[in-house]
Structure formats: structure tokens, C-alpha cells
Image (cartoon, rainbow, N blue to C red; front, side):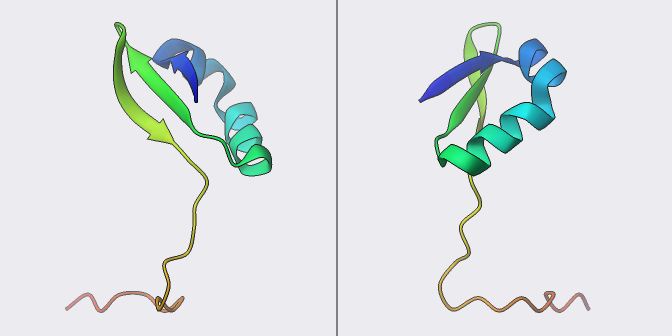
Length: 56
């Protein structure tokens, strides 16, 4: 799993999104050395449709 600082992520966001999409590998974004978010490729959940949720 690749790790990157939040400031580096901000500068290379689109490049990193493309990398995750192609490789399927995750990136952990850190701030002051602590993990704050994981960037991972989207996987459709089984049984979910592409219809929007009911927003009453």
C-alpha cells in the first residue's frame, strides 16, 4: 500500500486517481504522519442498482 502526504496528494490528485484506477492499489493519505483517508478503486456493491436513492 502506497502512502503519501496530504500536501503531495493535493498537488498530484488527478495523477494519483488515475494510478489507483489502473493498478487497483490503494493509497493512504497522511497528515502530520497520521493516516486520514484511503484512496481506493470503486467497486460496485452486489445487488445495488444504478438508480438514485429515494430522497424524501
